[in-house]
Amino acid sequence: MADALGLNSPQEMIRLVTVDNEGGTERRMRRVEFHLGVVDPSQPRIRYPIHALVLPKICGKIRQAPVKLSEWSNLSNLSVADQCEERTFTIDVLISLDYYFNLVDGDVRRDPAGGPVAIHSQLGWILCGQTCRRPTTAVTTLLTHVEESADQILRRFWELEAIGIATDNQTAPPDQEALQRFEEGLSFDGERYEVHLPWLPRRPSLPNNFPQARRRLLAVERRLARREEEKREYTATMRQYVENGWAERAPEIGPEGRTWYLPRHAVYQGEGKEKKSRVVFDGSARYGQTSLNRQLEVGPNLQIDLLNALLRFRRYRVGLQADIQKMYLQVRIAEQDRDACRFLWRDKSGELSHFRLQRVCFGLTCSPFLAINTVR
Image 1 (cartoon, rainbow, N blue to C red):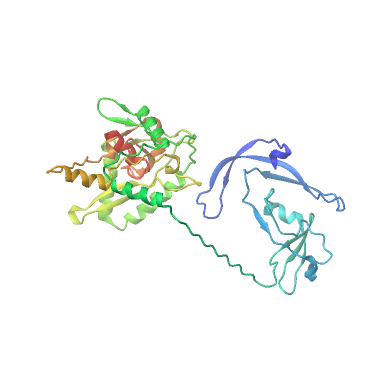
Image 2: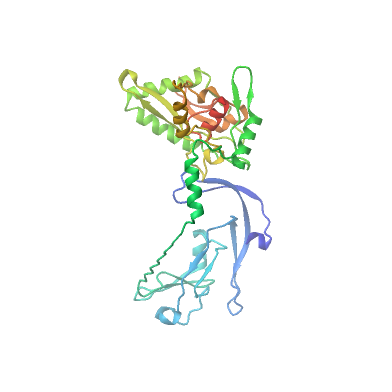
């Protein structure tokens, strides 16, 4: 509506907090000014000034239930602000409480039977509440019958018979593009391979999720305070990240839209003296309707499927397998992408410090693709 009216205005940063939206979403929005009034020429001419924020869409389409004013004693002879027939429409202006009570004057008409309530406003009578005298029930039945052709059945039979013999399908175009971008960004400095994070084609737009990362860290610290053994293992593992060069201290300010703090937790294996911890970073943690994993491409699945592995072991007399120690941590992340892999940790002085990963970590949706393709 703002574009249709040609409303020009400056932009400002606004934080929106909705139901189940932890921390809110910070975005740049336009603030416009217009006048709200009555279109009906028979009504008094009213022009009420409104200051509003502009959104691409307030909500989806809404269905309006029909109301017959003559059926309700409290609604007879009222001039309502809107039509009362059944229709589907979109919301153009959402009036907040800071304007609502300036528009209504307190005159309310209720029906003894609990029907619609009429509230008088400067724009006319507003209807709300129940519109049906008795509840209605609708039952929908759907029956679908599909007949598979003999050609499709025979084709699937031959495909099953050709498992392990037929050539592999060609890589899908999106996967080919991901592989090409990976190869273009891959580099080797004579000691270690370096990769770029596979960002989606659109420009990365990450909000500042520092408050969320701080809350998650405090929650982990409270839990470990009651488990001394796990705390020692967890602390030793985190120190390894800095001492082994897997992580480094982060600068005070990161690039806008590409700075993200990864919450993390520990996974413990073994018992007693054999108990070890592994740190898993939560790349799927959502903040402001997004997460780091939502901004990254998964990449094609490069892992060997079980059938091929079984066929390989049946081909020769001796089967060999190998494991790369800390495989993900052997691959370096390009410096321009490291601020998207920040995390919080307390140094030896106990102060909260900012670090960023230098290596590929557990928890990112693209980590298997980056590590396996680098080995290949």
